[in-house]
Image (cartoon, rainbow, N blue to C red; front, side, top):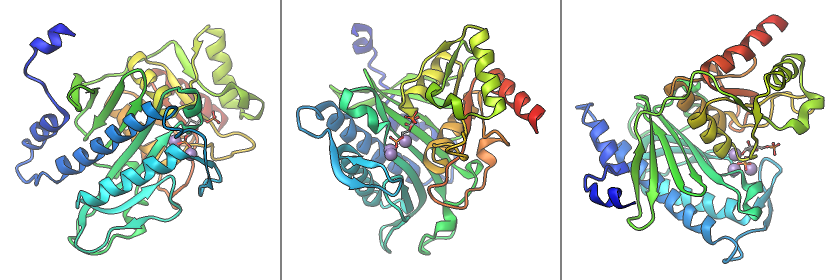
Length: 332
Ligand code: AHG
Ligand code: MN
Ligand code: MN
Ligand code: MN
């Protein structure tokens, strides 16, 4: 910790984004302002998650969300915080949250050109036992100035995202971000309340020794998924599954390996949501040299038709996902 104090050239998230945007003469600083508001939301959720047990924030909020899931108090609190932070940034046009059935269209006078899709609290089933949870976001942009946002602005393939990221509230608070020029990791320094750059230009190992899947669904998997997981077991790969996508993906990004939430007989489209879980993580994985596959094609090329659409997903080290693609190609 001492050398960090000696290092007075603190590269904060804000400075990093400003440096990035200087590459674009036409940049207006809008993305910097937007990402700063997202970071503010993350800092708030981090402090709420840390105090959850003490502040009786755990437990059910007594509501069901559009997913039919019991909403935990922190799901609702986090959602409110992000909606307020994004709206007050004055840089958004459309907001889509896991916790809201319909898109939020920003009122005249507060509109900007970015559309943000987000999962305010990912892995909320892990809150009550204090296991890592997170926030996931993806950012599209609209070109026409001033017109009201519309749902078509966010029913776009992941290839149209201009930025994506996640914040993991774990033993440390880690924010991982891409604006299409590689992947950068920041760690929250609570004494400064700043996200400090700790991992420049993250690259995922080309192949890994870890696979991450909910083994409990094995009885319902299709043949290629079954064959792939059996091959992992034959190679004595390690199984690591936290049950928070952000935590499982963050470990996969840093250590290598594969994360999969496949289709199964009960959930033919899998469980994870395209807009605010699959696309942001797929964008980050590709930018880090990995890839993401749906079982049929490249994750980012999927064109969503509904806000809360789900998709099977296989993401992580390039070679590991190639192995899955080969098995699905054989079956096709
Ligand atoms: P959320 O808490 O935002 O609804 O997301 C939960 C997701 C994801 O975080 C995780 O990968 C997956 O649910 C775990 O699902 P299973 O418990 O079915 O394995
Ligand atoms: Mn949920
Ligand atoms: Mn989630
Ligand atoms: Mn969630």
